[in-house]
Amino acid sequence: MTTPVASSASHMAAPASSEFRLGGRVLAAALLGTACGASPLPFNVLPLVMGPIHDEFGWSFAAISVGVTIFGTTASLLAPVIGGLADRIGVRAVGLWSLLAFGIVFASFYFVPGSLAGWYAFWLVLGIIGIGSTPVTWSRAISMWFARHRGLALGIMLLGTSLAAIIVPQIAARAILADGWRLAFPAVALLPLLVALPVTYFWFREPRPEEAPSDIKSADGSIAGLTLGEAIRGYRFWMLIGSIVLISIAYGGAHIHMAQIVGLHGFTPQTGASVLGVVALGILTGRVLVGILFDRVWAPGVAFASMLLPALACTLLMGTGTSLTLLMTGGFLLGFAAGAESDVIAFLTARYFGIRHYGRIYGMLYMPFGIGSGISPILYGAVRDRTGSYDAMLMAAIVMFAVGGAMLLTLGRYPTGEQRGHQNV
Image 1 (cartoon, rainbow, N blue to C red):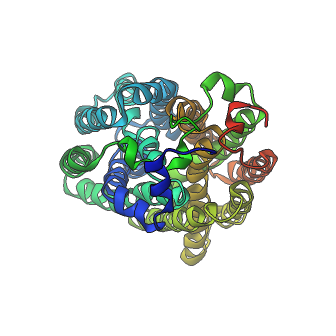
Image 2: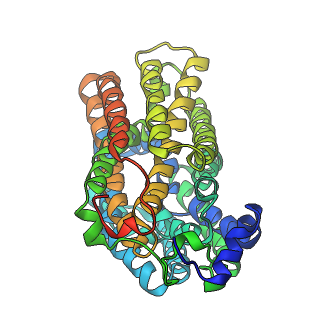
Image 3: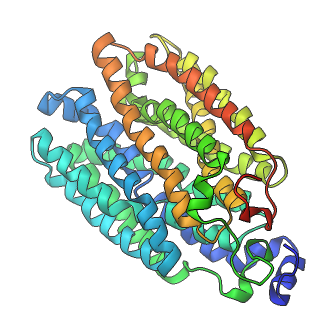
């Protein structure tokens, strides 16, 4: 940036900690919004209700998994629309209303009928109303508050999914023990309704002009960034799309079916919930460590190295009779890579394409992430139904992690503020 306005210059001249002083409450609210939104909650409840639903209705694991595929695909197709809405009217209104609607609909899963059509209809509605409670909304505000420590701030925000993965399976497991699988949904829905919604109402907002860092502005003081059309015409956008598709397909089903994978090694559902907690710790570690590294080292290189870890994880999860220690190690490494991947989408969207149309561009990149994550559980479930194990899919996942990570190495240097106006620089 060549001529930042005076207020922004003083903002950037302040110590790095000033970003956290100015945006700390917003960051805390975004963390809770992420933790209690549609991104982590369904994916942390379904692994624990999948077995009881299979036992009660006799549905195959693949058929059960179609529900979350419908949810993920529907939400992902709407992501650019909701992102564009956040660009126009602001993230506060979008985030608050989406949290409220998501909590109500998720609680209503208690009344799911005993038919696949009804099961799928509930997931469809959840996908329609839930996308505004995901990082598509929260990350725009964080990218506007933070520049020098954007990687760390986004990592902290995305820790919400790690917190959900630690807490939600325990809540769901206790609800299932108390009154069956149906109670898990309203019990978990209390999180967005009673925890996240009040905090985001009081603390979550975009920065005023004098509070925004100069790095998100162009020379005339306006918010800098490519339009969606300019981003699509550049090669970086498509390399990111390809990488996101491969990695989301490799990871999504492994997470959803983790309790079943652990069960094939001879352990109880409660142990499966514990391994999911270890996955969450891996995600948490990946979020923080990778976020810090993104602020200091070329992010695509960091992401590529992180995507090599799941190869070992998938190897440890294969077969039967593996020790619990090795399964937990595999879960941790898988989670670490997932933490890095989520940071990649948010960080690189802001770094390569700017903030002006961040919501729409991030929404377009979130679309393949959501669709891939939704398709993946079906693939894992189909392999399990046909072969009795997940080994073939885990072997394919090893290749997808490696290739998806390598694609990020083609992105090249970060563009400057002026260069963001030229999509192929």
